[in-house]
Length: 356
Image 1: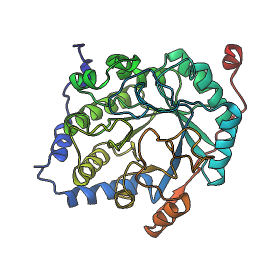
Image 2: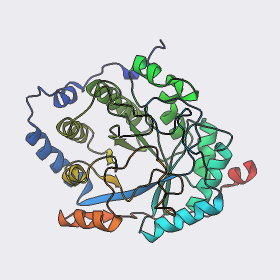
Image 3: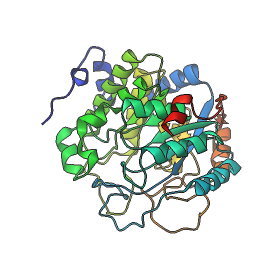
């Protein structure tokens, strides 16, 4: 088993975080909710930043036991060509979406770095903010991606439990635990402005994974203190392959985890996706979560082909329209934010043009 880096070992200042996470904590859920809400209002105000995922490709060489896109799934494989991508982006813009997360599987010939960079350039010419959730890259590749218009990446470690990680990642490039662990640092070194981390809740002991995630975020915040950091809280959803979580997490446990992260990391953005139920998402809005996905599709081409019955990476839980979700936010006196800054994008950088 590979040795973990020192910054993932226990450090000063985490005992309160661990206590807040525990079901036996002296802090009640109501106490944590009140403290988390006060912190959220003070640091972020009554706003909710909104984004939507866009799947570029479902090609993948890896054998992740929990993923609907694993290479042994009988899923029709496809990637978006640039004209198809433009149509998807136009469909998203018609919903008011201007913040897009581009997703692929692990690196393949069909969806390699050059393909991803071209897709970022296309999206950056049409959208206000473009981020990427894809395969781990080198520092130089992240620098090129930033030059193409990418402002952020999301990369989940999935689980920090190395034994569980080795068991769940059956084959393929994603088996390399330490390479994935170092990916956020390489992205920040390459000039990516924001990095989102998370664990896939249900794969391993959620309290231990949350503690390791807390250490990872704190390490990155100390080293790249100007960077924007976020934490996501995805729970396993039904998917092709039928994987069932070995460590299920109920709503109360997840709420406690969200509140603990908000209180311990007051400046970090906390993200909740459409994996969660409408009721839970509405309940968490304003209590700690500051960024949510809306009107999500988890199939390639899902925005222009809404009636396509192909299985996505996982099943969406909150399938409300953008209009319906925004109405629910306003009923809680929260303002939906589709665009909160202007990204002056004038085409790929000189370095990117040379690489092309």
